[in-house]
Image 1 (cartoon, rainbow, N blue to C red):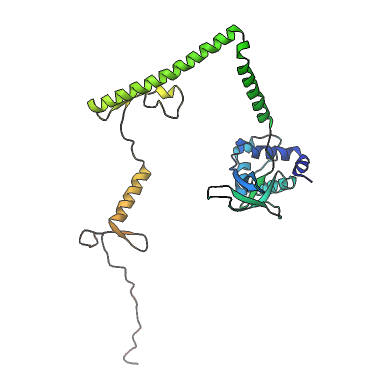
Image 2 (image 1 turned 135 degrees about the vertical axis):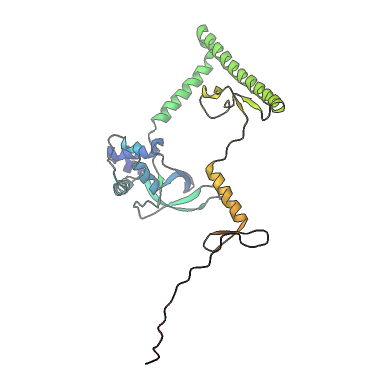
Length: 275
């Protein structure tokens, strides 16, 4: 029996769970492997368990409710007979170390969080169909542009001019802010940036806020400062076997407050002289 026939026998609630795991909402970490010379996606079991316990899965409808890892293990184990995914053993890379690794189907099909599972299901294809239809429509519209009504062609021309104008304005602003920055470095160090967040990963409006800003060095975080202090302490001292650091001066004498080790008092019995 083929995997397609097995998948068609799956109940609707199981199919909904599989569609969730195959979608981007699950956040499943899929990797690429090679099975019998073909590329396949595979994932680790604990990643699927984490996806079923996520808030995104709790919002899904017509799916089994999962409240613990035990229930997630049982549900994923029940999905395996329908061949949406199968347990595989991961081998060595096909070529270099960065190449996809080979995977082979394991004869013992069961679910374990530490094992790997290869996908034999591509998920819902309606988005691909809609994308394909839209792409064909755009191509046909571009080819048939000479047949468009004059009003539509005029509107497209105006839109293209506006787009080119915005690109040109962005280039002009970039050149002006660079020239202004070079001038302010000489006149008023450390320099001033106009629209300092112009190329930052922010929204369109936030790219122009604030209007200007001094080019000050970024402050180091507390973690970096603590790491630097620990490195300096290690470089200027001696590390004891228990991990403590002893500060040593130039003459090689320890400058830490040395105290004698604690001594335990022992009491010995002395025989009586009269006996």
